[in-house]
Amino acid sequence: MHTEFSLMINGEKVAGQAGSFSVINPATEDSIYQCPLSSVEQVDQAVAAASEAFKSWQHTPDEVRKASLHRIADRIEANAQELAEIIVTEQGKPMFLALAEVGGAVAWTRYTADLDIPVETIEDSEEKRIEQHHKPLGVIGSITPWNWPLMIAIWHIMPALRAGNTVVCKPSGFTPLNTLRLVELMNEELPAGVINVVTGEGEIGQAISGHPDIRKVVFTGSTPTGQKIMQNASGNLKRLTLELGGNDAAIVLPDANPEQIAEAIFQTAFLNMGQTCAALKRLYVHDDIYDALSEALAEKARSQVVGNGMEESTTFGPIQNQNQFNLVCDLVDDARNQGATILTGGEPCSDKGYFYPPTIVTNISDGARLVDEEQFGPVLPVIRYSDIEDAIQRANNCPVGLGGSVWSSDPNTASKIAQRLECGTAWVNNHAEVLPHAPFGGCKMSGFGVEFGLAGLLEYTQPQTLNIAK
Ligand code: NAD
Image (cartoon, rainbow, N blue to C red):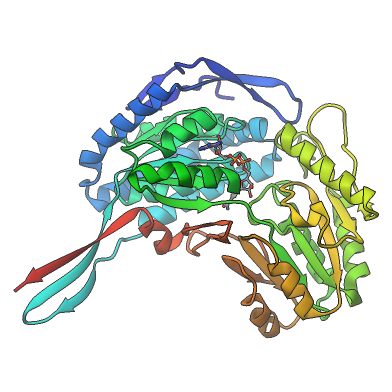
């Protein structure tokens, strides 16, 4: 594995002025690396470098920017194995999933590279011509979480650069190394200062969200942190894209076939050990098939091989960090104490490492912490319902709204119900699928703004109306 990691400011590899911090392998709890820690002054330096680079990058022809992004995709591909090893070691996910994350990073980069920013003609008459253009904003601050660290960095950085902005990014302190390596690779293809990376937690995040020379912050993470960023961003009216927490509900109609849907439900609930923003997190199942589906899900859970992501046989890795591990333990213990049934799992797997088996909890309902709070981990509450209107009401009775889904053998009926869910993406017979061309974002306290597709790209631009009198 790569062993040299630095901050990158103005095209230079630099050490952290605030020292360093330990990056922990969640499978072993060993410290694997001392990561450089930025000072607030280094945030200022990175923003100054990005501001300087913006002067020319904003005018760089589209074709040059597109080609640069494709060459970056080539570099990511050429270093896929190494990047995946870094991800497994600091994030915990099994190797096949880390390779899929790197593959997704490449696909998103290429798709974003090929997008064109349209000029819309509003009027073209004898008197005047009015056009709407989209200009880059300036320096973008990107703050990312620890669950899909490389992919989410790509989701932030690539559309920002494609639209002509420059970037200062800050990865999560739990999983910084893959982003440091990514930015190093990107600097082999880009002019100095176009992409910079700093590290640290709240203090450095606040230095970014409050910085007067940053025009926009794109943030993926928890709702409380998103609220702090929004408050701190008001000084210069920063544009914001906030992709925050969710507590996605799925409703299974009585006509669904439990055997047919169990695998897809399991995969979308336990994707990345359940640590996925748009994972299925509350499962409402009709009384008629409640027992059959619960048991089919428990069977899928029991067949997982829990272990270190570097081992080939592993299908299910550890939880990423101690706090998240403690939260999952607490939520399951609380459910058990309230009389819920733990159909499978329900106890940590080992003394060392944050291993927790995929856990299915039944005989539980709204009001229990496991249902009402975002678990963001490998445990799924299965909630019984008998009246569909009641199920829809319970699904929507939630302060967040990222995704939702309806499962049925009748997609038309399911689609009508799906459209009544209060969420940014509603799936039918699927969940948690994100695609480079389909806009994705939350409603209510899951945030605002979208990522992906043309709509996502335009979030990194400022419209300018050009009115030409003839
Ligand atoms: P978090 O909010 O704790 O941290 C996210 C990032 O914010 C980290 O880089 C952290 O260092 C930084 N940060 C912390 N305090 C800050 C501050 N005061 N100002 C600026 N930045 C600050 O979230 P997390 O624990 O890393 O991620 C888990 C959460 O993220 C879950 O709630 C999950 O649902 C959400 N999430 C959402 C999406 C989405 O697309 N909606 C995707 C992944 C994760």
